[in-house]
Length: 412
Ligand code: NI
Image (cartoon, rainbow, N blue to C red; front, top):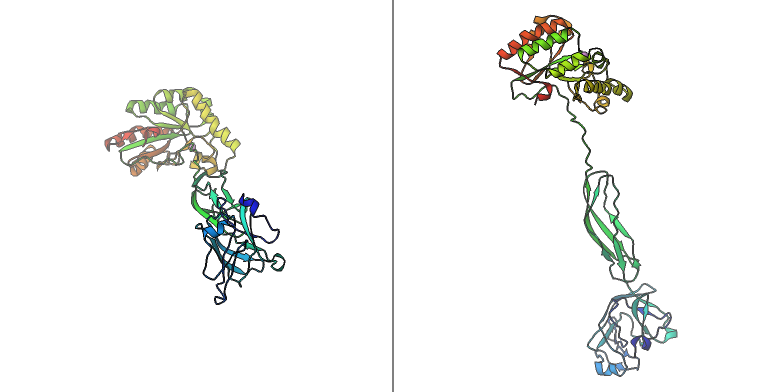
């Protein structure tokens, strides 16, 4: 006989046994009274069979009741009045035992069935006079799957599915416990927790790693003012040219001395004297950007930067075939708005000769020689004849001190 047919459901007189599905529930029960232990308990079976306290039925006796036995263990049961009872156990060896912490009772029906995919057994006693429904408390923890360490790129969305199921409640929501911020790189220890309707929880920790977003660096952010001090080198730099007579004369002096220098030229003067720019480049000097018309660029709009800086980059590139690497902002004046919106690296200086102020060749030499050190970037202006006068003797003095001359792009 099919066990499910034998145990027919009894409507509201049901004891749900929440167990794993593979276990079959037996139908004969012994009852012992644990509270009023002096009272003689009765163990009543369907047929019925009455046993004395401490006695159990054995497999043979049970077999006459047509009931097979399998392992069944119920940890606790509760009734509608929320009384709590401990432990009903049926054993595989054919013995049955129900420990029921209430007054002794007779059970005259037993049933088993299926409800929402869960097997249950019911106990019944004098159906009309015993109108309680006994429910077995759900102590089964939810099952949690797909919990693992996760990685997400900073500021990106992460989609990951945690799966939580419960034999009684079906699919459950998973809550993530712990705090994290996907805009802030780091490792976050979190927990995924599934909670069923009876507040059974399953929780598992995992690590969420937020990977720092790599910001593309388009140019060096540092500003050049001086080279490394490890070599006895110096860079001569000349601003504001080209000048129609002073620049060619300077180029000849540099040729004679075998020195290469760096020229920060103005775009508008390059437009006027393109051949001098070409010649400067052809002689091996470095031609760099000093803006188009020498304004104070600090706080300049993007439109002004385009007109002053990018326009001059293009003029120089057209004349020399080499795109300028550096911008020396007029007056050394710039801010982040400038440095972050141009393609050039900012180049300043470490030795200011104040040649534009003194207009005196000896003063220019003395100013330079008093400040020079390894890696110095010396600022002069090739639009002044007094500066050009100073360059030959200055080179001689520096050479005498052991300095060699490099272009700015050779400084390290
Ligand atoms: Ni200038």
